[in-house]
Length: 520
Image: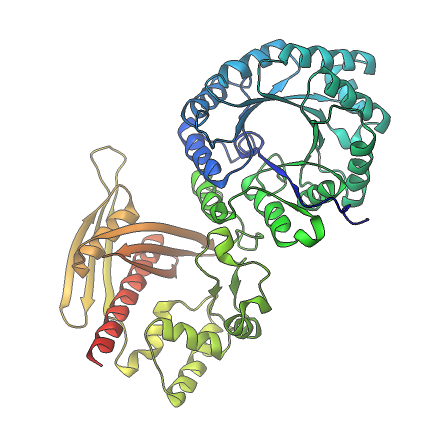
């Protein structure tokens, strides 16, 4: 493929369809309150267009669109709000009512144009299809800020007819011409050639742009979207975490960061606030119960994590050796050095120092050997494990977990209650009871009472099933200080308690180090 013509850096509009194409996929349904929360996050992300639903699909969809339009649509910095619509009067009317409160609205009208869709779905010939498209667009014209037309199954549509359809739509009032690979059928070379041809040869008003919408059935949605951009597309349709029908859509975070990381290659950029990417990804995972896989590009837990000793050494020396992006660019505080059987001495020493352990050379070498033996038996060596290894130096845990009990109920008055028994190296055995709106909050409250902190708040919980074990990471703010801990156990309650234990032991070590520094 040839390089992008030297016409300067183009701004590519980002059309997010997480709340429509993404939400309609099995396992990702959201209610109105959940959609609204995600819509606020997408507004902070600064997507250009937010497709918030399919108004005619159900009363619930129409309600969600209207609610989002009412609460977000009037804001000066709100994205263009959009509803999907078939080429029918009823769908267009439903979209207009739902989007009514929005300051800027877009109708996304679609019609299947491949021979297969014309025969199987519409049962009509090409001339009738063109008349239907023209009639629907003229019906919608003037009722929305913009109109987008999608030639559904465009990549399997006969090329000459596709051009005819797009020229008809542009003449009838479409502002955006979307050329979707509805079934994930195409390849980067093929879609590049198609967009280069369409942008050069489809007659249309000057303001009309082309859009690309790619599904991931063959694992090429992002590659195809980037190829379409190089071919002249001015808008990319995508979703957070790549969610969507079947294998999903083009992942927003991947296409945005590809353009951000390689402006030399694509000569294109976006207006997305990339530092909000991780927050939106995590919110979507928490809302739907579907976190992205560990190895998911950009937002997966391993995207900025390193276990191999060679990589860890390089990253500690200069992270550019193995990272082409900064984790801070997507809203992560830093990269993570995961301690496991592939880790080396540099990473181990760095983590021990972060935990407040300054070891001499001989003691460190002994501990490194112990660490390697332990790592061969576990997927990941946690902070608690490291503290156990150095405990014989007399600087082990401030806290030890003796027992944890949890009580929850389904009735409104039955707030989750946690009872924990802990041993403290100076205060002895302590038993406390904590309450909260959920079990993690109740456990956190019990630990905060035991540690006698003035103010403690649970900020985040990260839980993953690892074969038979549950791995849980927690983030807290304790008396204004951010602390974190992670643990693994077959019992989820014990895993959560030990993660909190690790966090409070880290907090105690930080306090010890601070006192030693003050004394010196």
